[in-house]
Image (cartoon, rainbow, N blue to C red; front, side, top):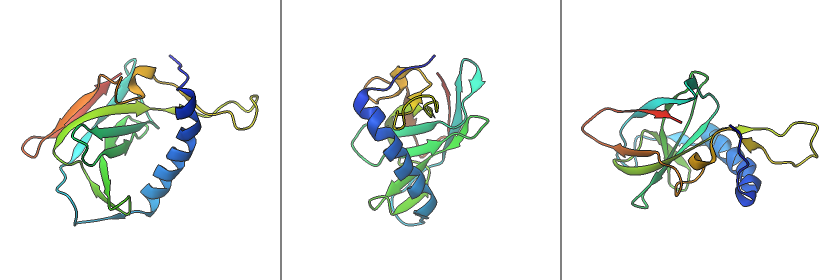
Length: 149
């Protein structure tokens, strides 16, 4: 099922993705910073693993959010960025999160240059306000989740 992301989000997404990838490659892991707890899991859509997706964990309390990228088998490990993205730490801070998942497919070469990518997952998972996906991260239990889209 294909959807077109809202116009403004489509225009921002390629830049945001580039910034996130750049930060992932250049930010240093840290042992300082907030206490985080491992968050792992799998994303599937129509009973198939979703590789190449970006998962964003939006802190409901306004605290630190996190991000993860799915591998080809749909698995992921969440990361928290802090100090304005200069530092990263594996896992998420304990708390409640709204979860969004997008998988962008580049526009075909037959379309004009600059055509934004398309999200190939259902649109309800694009924004924290619409997404039914929720996660509670705990310091006392395993934080392994399965997101069946």
